[in-house]
Length: 177
Image 1 (cartoon, rainbow, N blue to C red):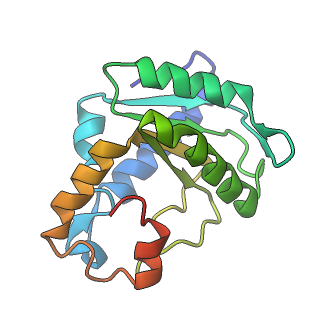
Image 2: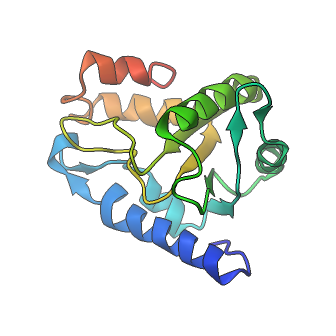
């Protein structure tokens, strides 16, 4: 686990890890008794997730924060970590709509690099049969290699994982499955 020296940063990261362990990694009947993300436990146990704290922002007229692009470039050259979670320590820094715009803009920029980003927000309304899979304790985005994400999604197709997903849910993540 990569923790920054700042105690507040450590608390934010530990809060996110606690959320991952207690919610994202727990088997859920909505996902055929698999975890919300069936692969995160392995990554976490193998220390393949890097956690970054950043006061990132998004303004339509200015685009993405330069710090975000630096973090993306750093992750792209990182040969060890499979997942990067960038957490904003201010839970109210971006509205849900701004975070969705941020993620869409970020994906437009990073898809040519073979990367994909997913966002989380305390007010995120995305849900599968009432399970709010992206309602995290802090505003954040996760970056991964898109080919690997597609491989994992392909493996899940042969299970009951996607049974309760609506066409709207599937369309929302159409870049994955």
